Length: 517
Image (tube, rainbow, N blue to C red):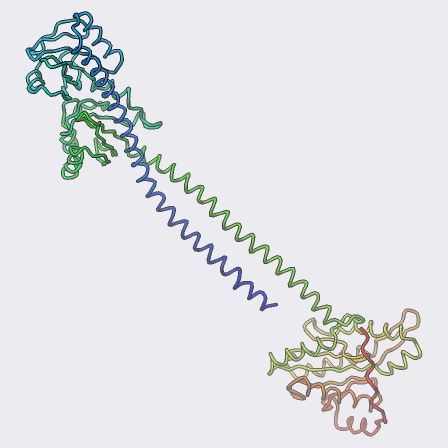
């Protein structure tokens, strides 16, 4: 059985244990990586979101430009009255996010979409705007129409010196219309629109240091952020790249994403409170780790269940094997061990304990053939059953007791410690047979001839020890039966031995009665 459990340990318990340890280690490693990668992934998603917002603004600008191109084409193809021109320019405002439209000439006069005459040459940005005839975008912090910052889209009209000036708002209204911060960030995030140099065009950040017209990078450096790092970010913004960076303002830590608003020369900069970002990252990684924990737990439980099933199966199998072994080792009539089991266990003990003191009794029931002939075989069986049932009471559970022949029993006493114990145990056995009776109504006294041999004095192996005990049985029979004899008569004085030998009887060694199972 030990070999089977050892094999089971090697095949199941050890691999499952190692597998569980590796799984736990991998889980811990994956957890750390998940937290790290989730942080990168989340900031990356915020950058992608910023790109989407920038694209929405860019598309809105392009829509205003596309509507303006259609109107500019119509104005160049037809000779129209001012009233019609005003209506067509108004259609640009009503069909796009543009706030104002002026049909201007390089001479400095113009007609607005409201029908008013405008002196363009009075605007501070007139000369720069008309220094070339090419159409382009031009950002102004004050459009000098309604006082707001605007992106001016300049579109030539025909081959003359007239141009459509479409004013697209670059202020908080554009931010609020196109940028919808993610849920949870509404009160802890800010948005900037800057030009390539970092000059703020519009912002939702209520701080005078970051007001429109201020230099975002100078403001961040003034707030104590690393100047070299800010310059690196500025270089990326000037190159119309997208990315993210971290900075401090008033003791608060923020993470920012920047991305160009394609075609406008402007950039969208979204700013998030780092603490809130951390909370979302923790929640997201926590959800992943929680799922991974359940998967890991299920795998471990599955391995444990499989192991437990195999343990139960091995236990049942072992128990069944032990039951079959016990049945195979048991004498069915008396319930004691049979001959093979008795001899095997005695041999195993002698091999494992060569230096210990033990003793072997061979018990041969006197006149058993006569009992069978006169009392019947059923009574003979009863004698054997009762002897098997009662003899064990006189000895320890650890001692070996078995029926080794038809009317022969064997008792092997282990670990007797000292010589005096041998004689004491012999007296117990003599006393037992003096009082052993069988029968419900008429009690029949059963006697036995008993031979005793001491291990290792009378034999260091089973065969030699058995021969010594068997010789002692023969000695008991010759001396008149119903007694116990040691092979070396250590329990008698020289006088007692001489007397016993002087009164021996002639006997013939009887044939052993076949064992009945």
